[in-house]
Image (cartoon, rainbow, N blue to C red; front, side, top):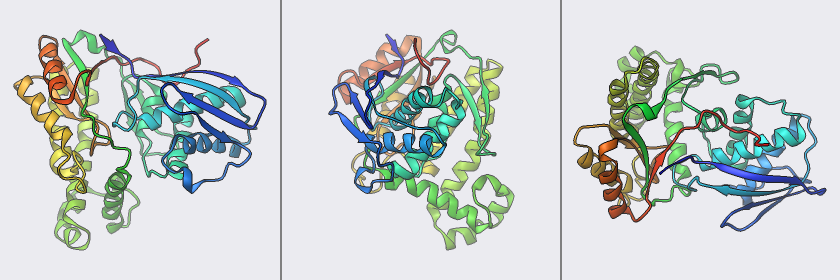
Length: 348
């Protein structure tokens, strides 16, 4: 059966300054909003996300207060499925409704989540995960104007393609790999700085290729390769969007595979160089390609380094694909996904 990855919560104000966050199967997290400053000892915890999101709402001029929240979640923690972004959007949507009269739209809630992740959680992430969680559905995101990203919702029904979207949990925990994620952004920023630019988006690709030997010398080989991945995936993202909009799904799958190969060879985010013997993602991709035999697509999912693999599997190969992944990574490692058309919402 197909599943949605959801955070669902029941919430009630409790008349105190303390948020009690209870996620089913996990210890309760309590955060006193009387102090909304960054806490070093909270870095990379759920408490930091709660404090960070509500601190941002408070800085925007809204009084925040304590509430009790009980959460059920089908989002695997620390696996590359945007669990921190989903939690941020949940807290942001809740705070927006309880304290802000629903003033903030999905884009603003995503930016509030990114703020919490960057400054309170301590991960130098971009805005993509938060935007996808907050907006929902198939979307094309353009971050040229970071304060007002361009969003195109794509009317596309995966169920009509004859393929299933399957996420495989390789059981590798990426929650301790912050340094690896930060290095990706840092190295791309260093290449941009070489040209006097803030981000690679602003760099002329032809100038990049002309200066490649000097960039290699002054920064690193890996930074060059990661920049090459960036330029290529910028083109592929646009091409994937056009393929979906015009129902050219086979072209979309080709682009997904090309992007996955680029991630492996250039971005180099399939495993951590600090843990070279832990290579669950390359193993899952190899096994997936063996089953698919040139059909569909399989690639790293999310930020990588550990966690999950994404595959578009023809319906007649779904059982064989799931059976093999469960054999290698353990029972119930595979999830057949559905993509809901909305993001963070209040359910009445």
